[in-house]
Image 1 (tube, rainbow over the protein chains, first blue to last red):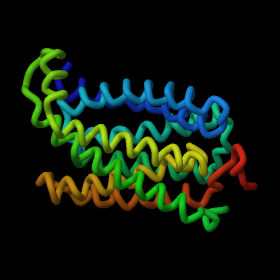
Image 2: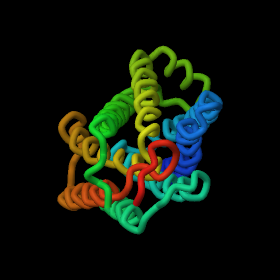
Image 3: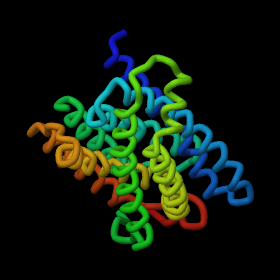
Image 4: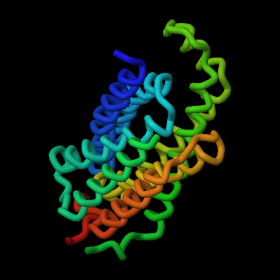
Length: 110
Length: 136
């Protein structure tokens, strides 16, 4: 595997991990009785994401690595609906889609 | 459509999140670039611990966490998260200005599309759960 491919793979995995970490942080706002517990779990998961992303930046330029993290918007939106029960309207999905397209254009030209 | 009902404190929180995200990315990149070129995990960790830039990274992360938790108190995760994509725009521009990286014309189109996407999300209800929930 080339260094660039390894860097891209690390960024993609880190975005998936971030999706789960973010849902735990949001859970802390919904379940205030156990707020600190959810924050601790969320932060622990996000630390894993930081380690993965730090590794990726050793192989990729920040202008390339950062836009790839836009995949986390899809993961966060899906998990917000599935795990938190948020109402994700078609317009919100359209916005996430445009963000993906926009960041893809940025990545393609980086 | 409830985009006009976004309270000022949420707008400020989202703006701070974008600013901190941008600063974090640029500082992080600077710190990573200064690490020695070694495959040893231990040597890398020691280099990180001795590099003052990573203290700044930790400060940025803590500030970002505190601010983000405040934002999530007032908005859906699936509403707030897309706004942070605006930091792609700021990082792209600042990478050109500060790090000397090149920006292609299609990247400018990408930036416009990202902004359009964020606008779409801003037109949806900010909170559908908990005490701050609002009707769609």
